[in-house]
Length: 321
Image (tube, rainbow, N blue to C red; front, side, top):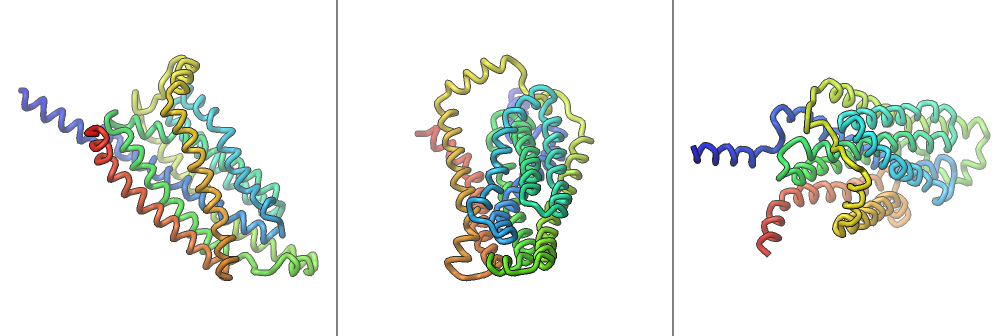
């Protein structure tokens, strides 16, 4: 009997996700890749819009500003949504908003105004903020508590896969359609010539985002059809003020917030302006520069999986120390 209990305990420790949660877990992993795709499909738009609308770097950087301000504004409401309707509901709302944001690129491309694209990006990023805030804890409760962190890091390791796909899509389907003419050349064109050129360029920008919307809709339909009960779906309930006070009193948690802020800030700054730097320093085309950005993200992808594999070793070493 003791041996049977030991075997049962060992099987529970080896279990990565709860019974019946394999397919939902796969769909959520796809969500991690899907929002990574949107993030790094958007980064090259800073240079793309600078060329199309003949703007300064400061003006074109509003692309990332609108994207991440939306993330900031929607993260706390996303947590409230989770506490009301559960993680599954939060994921579905996030995917729906993100799909709407991508589809807004259609009227934005026809309006041919920079502001319309910024609004579209704000809505898209807002949906992804809700999705990310919901999917992270959702993954953690899909299996045993002892390996929740490893399960989350495994899912997050697929985010760079989406990032690489996003940059690849931008490199193949957006950057080649941006005409390599200077702002002075554009200013010398007739109004009709300028409209025709910008229309073609903005249509190229629109296409991948419409494709993203279709992907988000497919994921939402798949997740909506999955039956989840109990701990696999519900967000923790209780006094929010007490939980917030306890979290803010945790020095490691507070330090983690600050560290994550600077981590994302540095990543965003580096990858946003990689295209600018490479094209200026090497004198190559935007498309060729896109492959340099791709190389950096491929390195990020490989090291993400390496670090996930090393996590159990790291934990053992820390405990031994």
